[in-house]
Structures are given as structure tokens and as C-alpha cells.
Image (tube, rainbow, N blue to C red):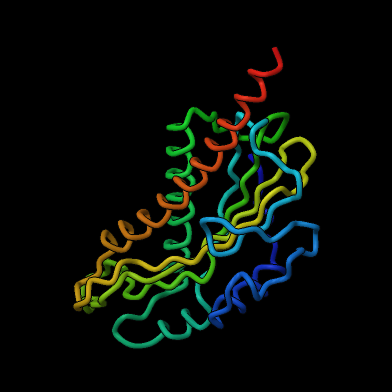
Length: 227
């Protein structure tokens, strides 16, 4: 099983810019490791110049790193809706498992084999969920007050994509998403919170699968003209 190696140095910089309302134009054109900032369907997208995803037929996914929004723990340590360290770990573990499950489902739907190790023609995904904000956590403990909110919360996907043989980084993406705002106070439960999180994860997984599909489609004409 591949281990996660979340880049702890670049992520805080990107998060600081995004939290301040900055756009991609405010970020450096070239990252510290030579990736180029390009337009895309996510808020921030860096790509290795000349890199192509078309050679990759298999995908490996490392365990996702999950981190709550700054001060989230402090804000939920007291009061009727206090959350324990055990509760937080349960949320993080569940979200990481859901990410793996949903990304695996979408990739397999596109015909990509999901494997456990890197290697030739393997694309390695190193995902992280950062800035996680569960607006109204539900620990399901008896006697606890109900949690009400107009939205389940928000989170940011931080994804690094590597060549499975060389370990060279190919793509870095950052994309914040917010849960749907119902416009009125609603009872938020662990079920509704998970459903909203899964909806956001599914959107990211579909974007990834579609990017791989486009790369695979671009490979076909080149092969056809070689005969």
C-alpha cells in the first residue's frame, strides 16, 4: 500500500491566498518544483510542462490526509455541541475512506484499473482534504442538542499527481467547495453531512476521470496516423 506524503509546505501558502479571496492570477506562474500555472476546471492548477496523462492506464490512490479548518477544534471544544478528539478522528477517517471509495468508483467507471502500488503506466494520486469545516457536527451521542445550519460546511481538495515509475510530480490541484446552502436553518445529522461531503467528492472524482478520458481520446488520432 502506498503511503501518503502530503506536501505541508506549499499547501499553507495556497490556502492563505485562497482564504484571502485571491485568484489564480495572484499565484506564481511557476511553482517551486517547476510546474506551470494553467487555467482549468479547478481553482488552482499546476502542470508539468509537456506532461501527458495519456500513457497511464492504471491509477493508485494513497490514503487521504484530512485536516480541519484552523480554529475549528477550538470553536467546538465547549458548549452543547462540543466535539472530542475521538469525534474529530472519526470524521477524518470516514472522509478519507469515502474519498478512496468514490474516486475508485469513478475511475473504474471510466475503465481505469485501480491498483495498490506504483509502477509503469500507473498514475499515483496523493489526495488531501484541507480546511475542512463541518458547520454542525453530529456525534450521535444520546442527550446531545440538535445541530442546525443552513449548510453542511465546506472543504478544499489538495491533489498531487505523480508518475508511478519515476515518482516525478505531474500535476498539483487545489479546489475549495462549499456544501449547498438551503437558505433556511435545517437539522444537520451525520447522514446529511456525509451526503453533502460525498456530493463534493463525487464532483472532484468526475473531473479527474474526465481529464483522463480527454487525454486518452487525444492519444487515438496520433496512433491512427502512425500506420
